[in-house]
Image 1 (cartoon, helix red, strand yellow):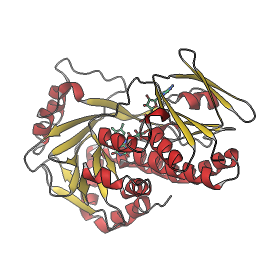
Image 2: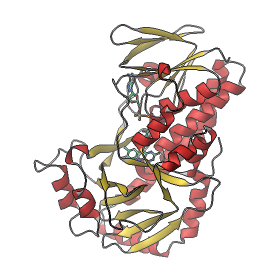
Image 3: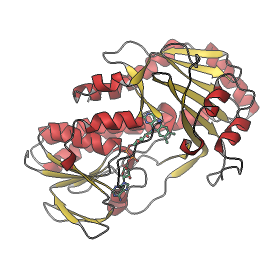
Image 4: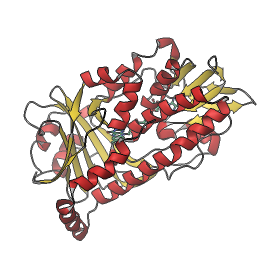
Length: 379
Ligand SMILES: Cc1cc2nc3c(=O)[nH]c(=O)nc-3n(C[C@H](O)[C@H](O)[C@H](O)COP(=O)(O)OP(=O)(O)OC[C@H]3O[C@@H](n4cnc5c(N)ncnc54)[C@H](O)[C@@H]3O)c2cc1C
C-alpha cells in the first residue's frame, strides 16, 4: 500500500490537509489545483476542537495557535448589543481558535514538500480501469494514479464525473465577509459573537493580534446584485443602528476584499465514491456556514481517510471504509447547520420575538452539552 500514488484534485484546505496526512502516512500524494497560485483569503474561520485535534495529530497545532485568536465563549446578541446568551464552549483537550484562512493554509503547506503540488491543472474528466485512475487536465496533461480523491469544492468536477451534474441549493440568504484591524474592544476577551436581527445576522470573530473577521447575512434572492454604491455602503445601510463596533469594522475593511457567497449546500449524498475514486470536504458534503464546521469537516475527512489507507488491505476497501465512517457525522452537521441558518434568518416578527424569548430562557448549559458532541469527535 505504502508505494501507492494518490491523486488529489483541489488544493483548498481539504485537499492540502489530505496530502499532508497521506504524506505523513508514507503515501505518494499529489495535489492538482486549477488556480495558478494557492490562494486562501485573509478572512478568518472557526477551528473548533474537533479540527484543532486533527491539527495536533498532524503536528501542526502549535503553529496554528501562534497565529490565531483563542475562543472560549460564543455570545448571541441583539441588535442593540444586549447579550442574549453566553455559551461557554467547555473544557476540551485542545482549544477552539479563530484563524485566518491564509495562515491555516500556510501552516499546512509547511508539512508538504512543494513537488507534491501541481498548480494550473484544471481537471476536465477522469477514466477508471480496474486498478488505475487517469486524470485528464485542460492543456492535455494526463496523470495516472492508484486512487483519486476529489477535494474540488462544492461545484466538484470529480463528483459530476461520478454521479452527473447537479446544482447546489441556494438557501435564501447571502453571506458577506471581511477582515479588519481594530484597536478598540470589539469583543470581550476570548469571545466571538453573532448578533441577530430580522432576517439578518452579523458575526464578529477574533483572529488575534487586533485582527477581526466579520460576517453579515441577509435574506436576498440568489441573483442579488451589488448596489452601485458598493458593498461597504450597502452593508452600512443594512446594519444601520446596530451596536458598535459593527459600522467601524465595516469601515476598516477593504472594499475590494469583501467576499460575498450565497448560502448553498446539497442534500446529503448517499454515495461519495465509485471504484478507486472518492470525494472529500465540500465536494462530498457541502454545508451552509452556520456552525462554522465545513472546513473542520474537511480536516476530519483528511485524517480519517489517511487512517483508512493505513489500516485497510486494499485501496478499494480503504475508500469504502472512509465513506461509511464519515457519512453519518457529516450528514448530522449538514442538517444542524441548515436548521441553525433557517432559525437565524427568520424574519416573521412573531417568530423573531419567540426566538428572542426562548434564547433568553434557554440554559446555555443545554446548548453546551449539545455542542460537546460535535466538538468531542475523535478521528
Ligand atoms: C461564508 C462562509 C463561512 C465559513 N466559515 C467557516 C468556518 O468558520 N469554519 C469552517 O470550518 N468552515 C467554514 N466555512 C466552510 C469552509 O470554507 C469550506 O467547507 C472549506 O473551505 C471546504 O474546503 P475544500 O477544500 O473542501 O473546498 P474548497 O475550499 O472549495 O477548495 C476546492 C479547491 O479545488 C479547486 N478546484 C475546483 N475545481 C477544480 C478542477 N476542476 N481541477 C483542479 N482544481 C479544482 C478550487 O480552485 C479550490 O482551490 C465557511 C464557508 C462560507 C461560505
